[in-house]
Length: 137
Image 1 (cartoon, helix red, strand yellow):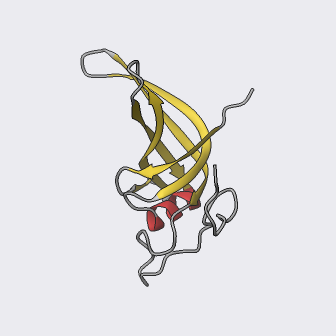
Image 2 (cartoon, one colour; image 1 turned 45 degrees about the vertical axis):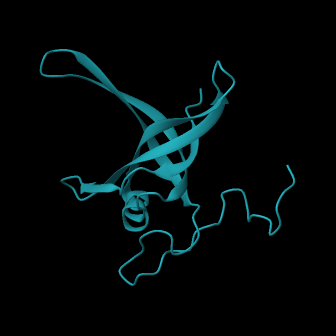
């Protein structure tokens, strides 16, 4: 069986960084992905889906240091659904992506960086460099 997710989208807010009692880093952020489709009238509409992303350890540290609201990223991971009961006894669910890989897709200088103000190098694209000329299709 396979549980694998690949997303490319933009952060909806700065990442939230926290630590477990034993010192492990956990970083959460929201990622927006868009798709365009036609509605019943034939008009194009943009539909945005929001995803909860969770990272642990070294990847969480990198996400906390280098990601910021609006930054475009490639995220690879797996889906996990948590269930709990609220105060009224109603069963609630949260679905999140446990990230195993993250790539920054924005150009240098478009997000926050380490204290020196410089951003860590990141590939321009998860699929290789973009061509210099416009693609006709």
